[in-house]
Image (tube, rainbow, N blue to C red; front, side):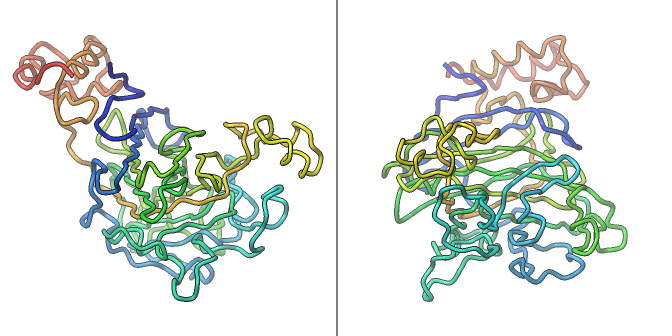
Length: 389
């Protein structure tokens, strides 16, 4: 039996999660689809070569940022100073505990460097140069050199896309995959933030400057927090090679209206044995050896944000592609996006009788766009019903 929170699928492991936006200009419920596949090529969606950000040029690696961020580019914000203090949203005090691994941010973990990071793995040999954000949106699942994010950071990579004009965003897709080792690096965990502006002068004011307003951090609002593939505690021991997450609006074809900047913050995802963990320090489920090694050995070491009670994740994801799409037409009455209209879709339809069609995905059943779901809409949908599922 299907439910909206967990669907029976042909993939190895997949499901929907529905969450209410935290704040800002996003209205409706945000839907996150997550999928794990035994083979990267078996994921239900392909990497795109025609999405909004395909071919975006990259603006530096974050260490040398011009005073104005040109539009139509991807910006690596992983090493910008405000992140090292652990703050991404100054107004709402949303913390991210980013890149700088000094200052006790890592607790008892071994620190491999004390420098701000460009968001990519720092232990690559000279023959394998570090990754670049331009490779994350080029329509090609790049090599390990181009896609392994930074280990040992509370978060790994921060990438920001600036659009040339206010742009309606319909959907975000993120692909991860480890072609060499089916382990915890295929898990994903990230936050998405957006920003809006008028762009009337050709350089969107919403892109801000490094000298003023800390690059406009206070103007970003959360779109979804804690998007992830799978559930914390899952163990990938040579099972899954790839993962896919999709973020979209359950109640509209538009995820973010008039977006000028979209920022994605990728967090650490696993431990060395391949267990999917959150990036915050737990205590209760830790081994006695680890507890004894830490400074005070008390439960006060458990951080408020911890969700799994385990040691913080310190192995990063292998991100193969980020695709951002224009609003795409939603199939009429296909509430679960499985390309048919079956009994599950019909059961969901019952919630829409005499209900507001702007909630619960009911706009998909309003065929004649009358603002209500009526018998005439059902008459139009009925011939498309495919049967049980």
